[in-house]
Amino acid sequence: MIRLLVTSPLSPDFALPLDDGQSRYLTQVMRKGVGDEVLAFNGADGEWRCVIEQIGKRFVILRTQAQTRPQTPMPDLILLIALIKRGRLETVVEKASELGAAEVWPVVTERASVERAREDRLRLIANEAAEQTGRLNTPDIRPTLKLDKVLGDWDKTWPLGRRLLFCDEAGDAGMAADVLARERAGPWAILIGPEGGFSPGERARLRALPFTVPVSLGPRILRADTAAISAMTLWQAALGDWTSGV
Ligand code: SAH
Image (cartoon, rainbow, N blue to C red):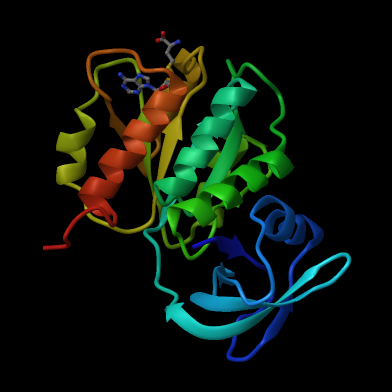
């Protein structure tokens, strides 16, 4: 069934208007009509089965029927991704949404290939992936920041602490799966560098930080998108919601 990320609150017997894009998608692309059912979620109220109640000129009105899934917490995982080429960055955002990242922070590093990310387009990609993947929320795509600033503000941003899985291609760190097996769940972030890798200065600074956990992603050099997918997968399997929790 079609799932839509909406901004309205979701409660019993509630009429919610869809935005222009979603209305067109439902009626023109998916050829849905009055009486057809869709699922709606908003990141706070769980998932609700809704029926198309009215199709106006400019927008569709849904009526909530019943809650299908309660809102449940997601693992507290943030992905810090260096600015890589646009196509691959878009892939990383889509995979981060599927793999359950709570937030994606595009960061500028010394060897980043581009200066800016188009956050609005990335948000759209993250939201569509969240609808497809069955999440009850969507990752927050943060404004692009310099890595130096993110690291400098770390303790202020996360006063209760957050460990940083530093995916270091230098190859002298412990294997990610072994390292993560010894770690505990909680607030984590994963850092993936750009096509050009981390500079010696960046590596030295990162290794010296108390909240950093350097890891290797195996004996081969992975492209940044592959590395991001692999690291998120390993983290979910070790500390996230890809475990039976026993
Ligand atoms: N140009 C660099 C590779 C950068 S790969 C070089 O040839 O050395 C882009 C990013 O993916 C890296 O900065 C790192 O964060 C991650 N990555 C790729 N392969 C990795 C590996 N084997 N171990 C740890 N991280 C890796």
